[in-house]
Length: 86
Image: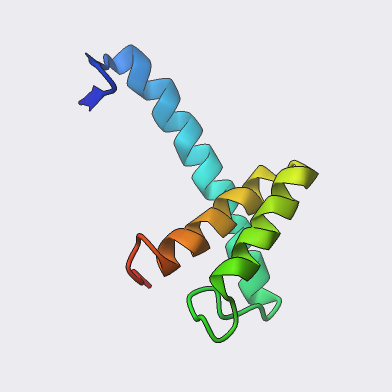
């Protein structure tokens, strides 16, 4: 696998992969918890506008809540670059 300008060894990939998995689990747990509470519309512009997401993302950065930052960045990506994956 190439990452940047050099090949990564398994010594590089294992910690990176483990960190990514742990963070992904945390973000998904938060999303599923919110869904269970009744939150909806993350993939629908009728509920969320792109500027609303960016405003909330900035607030999450200020709070230091990197899980919300990640999830809100995913929402923004899904509305723009992601092309509406959901």
